[in-house]
Image (cartoon, rainbow, N blue to C red):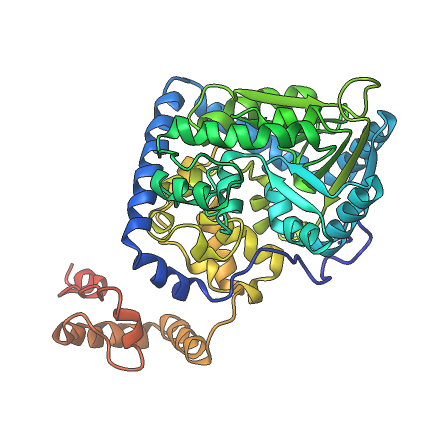
Length: 472
């Protein structure tokens, strides 16, 4: 299979902020030791789950909407090359310029060059997972260009010299007292008597950003959806900062993963019902901004769209793993995941944390470079039940675990188990031998004791099925 950029699907895959400095187990142990982090996460995810559950329960056809969303995503992935070409044609006809980026390095260079061409040294940004994925802020700063995040949570993360830990609520790991300290330390012109009341904190951020909105001529955004039929792009948000970024500047640059496309305008009907309920627990998005190329005298007069691959073509080539490209970034899977709730997002080492990150990040980087993430799950299936487009995350996790490198001892043990199960008499003898494990107190001897260090060994029954069958 060839990628949409003319390169083999086996080419080196995604780079950027998709892997951490250490494997998930090591990072998770550190997170588990932070009791304040766990309290913050538990409070936030519990609140979001409850709110989302209530508005979902209002819809009698929620399951039908999920089926429709899943079917639309499947059909879109099957026709992705043609739809992307159609989108490029429509955007170009509307006065925009389309750029194709094979990876993070190329995408960052395209955006940096576009900003430099304007002569500006500052850009305002709409919250964007794609730009976080490629490390755009770091690339702009290295080029002497100041990126200013305008989403409140992203601003908190940026001012705190921190990293996002949640897809929807990047600063979910911070409480309001911590946010106050960040504002006092890093926000220019902040009132020294600032309190930690949410309304006061929001007002301080609003004052700080207002001047920036009015004085900055270049904006960078992502896109929640791009409609191939019309060339229309859409951003959904809840604060209004996105609307300011998309309308006030002279130049708008949108960086979008190639999977964000939908075929027809009417397809938005499904996703604009699914997304707000599954993500923020709202019936509709407070701000849904759509734009179509360039309109003389109205909004940005120079529009560029950067279509980002960064490993997505390789994901699409995997018949099981490609489901991860259906994700609409609602974060519902994070909010129900018992692993995420206890470790937080930083432990995943990627801008895509939680269950969806555990299946998407390894595929974008290559499973061998992110081999611990597919194991960052109990396989409880809560993520599958919560996903508004029915991504079967547990099945993808198992699929990726099979692709991950395994120690020689584990491979040898699995081969021995397969051989034993394939020979009835040997298997029966093993069953009887397993009865002796009850005398080990639920623990295995070395070198197998690592498995039972964190889990109990199931007690074998007094009578095997074969013995029961013979007796009848």
